[in-house]
Image 1 (cartoon, rainbow, N blue to C red):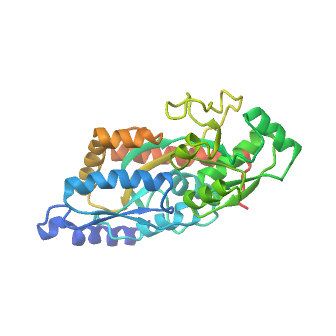
Image 2 (cartoon, rainbow, N blue to C red):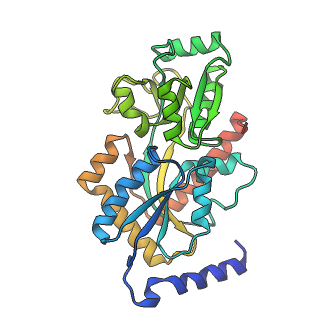
Image 3 (cartoon, rainbow, N blue to C red):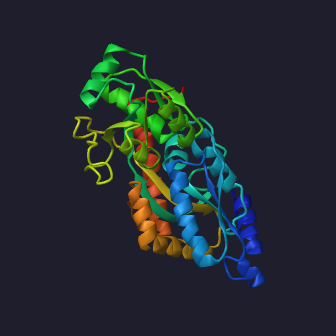
Length: 322
């Protein structure tokens, strides 16, 4: 960000700060941007936390889905929003760590244009198959894919998404060929997976959990160090011999850069408090969210580390956008 832009942003923060009008924050509804369609993991997490904040603030937290381009459209909207605390985003590894390393040009800087507020946690990727795919184990799937290169497809939330990166990592680790089919978000990808339009995906746990339990999808692997109680029958990728499958779908609330520090700190404290509430904690853990509290400063450091990690991963795996 240039010096001139920094000055303008600072002046804007003063002008729009609720303190300038003697109003307590928040004094009107808050917009929470989600860079994916309804039904995906990011959307679920945003709505659960947003509902609790609405209860406490007496102000509606409106979840606004701005889907497309693996979450980067929503991130760009946030980056260009007034830094007054009334526009937030449920940020994601896609838009702030993976896409910046895969896309030649982004309309925002993943670090400089945002104020980290509160890390929420991460959810694992689950390799899910449509029941029509004749493979009941990871070993059987790999053998099937090797015998039929290019015949099967995997869905993702878009080019540059964690699901895309997971699929490419799987191909690299197993020496298989699977056709990538990108969508605008998990919701659309899951619909086509359930319909059998695509063969499999590597989506986050929330949108596939109930479908696996109901037998509508078959789970073959999960990207956690240990099996999860929610899907005890699904082995980890490490158990299946796929070491190095390190894709984290993390979530965290962000605000535009230059948002007043007092607002950032209040939101951070309240979001961390919400994550400890039994109903919120239970709902998020139910869909596999691995919760963790971080301060705004710690969250910022985490984002920088993730950006560097995926830069190395993309380079080492020689992953390219289609």
